[in-house]
Image 1 (tube, chains in turn green, blue):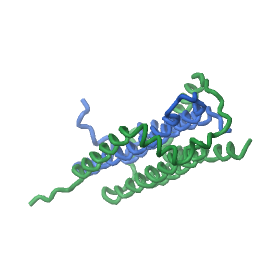
Image 2 (cartoon, helix red, strand yellow; image 1 turned 120 degrees about the horizontal axis):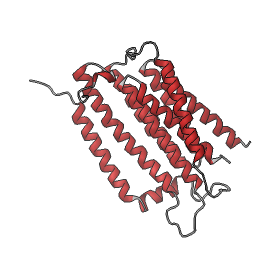
Image 3 (spheres, each protein chain N blue to C red; image 1 turned 180 degrees about the vertical axis):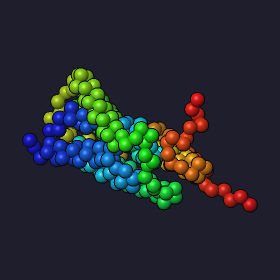
Length: 170
Length: 108
């Protein structure tokens, strides 16, 4: 058991644990957002451990940072009351736990059946990790996708402003 | 060495948990957050597969498709969540409720 494997196990357990807390146990929306933040931070650590440093940092900045904070700011606007009790009775948390266990069992069964044939990689190639090769690949080979995504982001900004703007009725 | 199956299993578990949360929670913002959890699981799977197939032929000119796709996916996720939240705000203003059962105009 190398340090890499141990660290991956710890981060993966933290991510799954906070995801389960977020889905099953958390009652208020702010608790769900905090658990999601913890899960995304653990996943960023997993990504950096897998050798994709730029992806991990970008996920920390964008998903864990910007999106979760944006979600928390939405609570300021629309209020963050908890959920109404489900119509089935007091079965909310139990139902979610059973659902999570069943879905997890299904997922692990599907993964276990599918054959994973891949060449064994000895170690990370130092020439392909880090931000410089990623930047070169992004701007040389995937420049078109980058530009299209910039257009998508621009239209999302304009669209969300149009939707959420409160018009003054005079 | 991190086993490839462990990375894929982690991604599958997180995706399943997010899917269950998106189906069974009753607050619209919480559903959106579970969808974001599913996206994060997909990013982990992409990077895991990219690491798995890291040994490639010498003639391959683009050796890091998975990681590049993951970065572009994170940007697309940010755009999607921004638009989804704008829709949510409009819905909450018009109906004054964040319950998932109150948005039922398209039910038969």
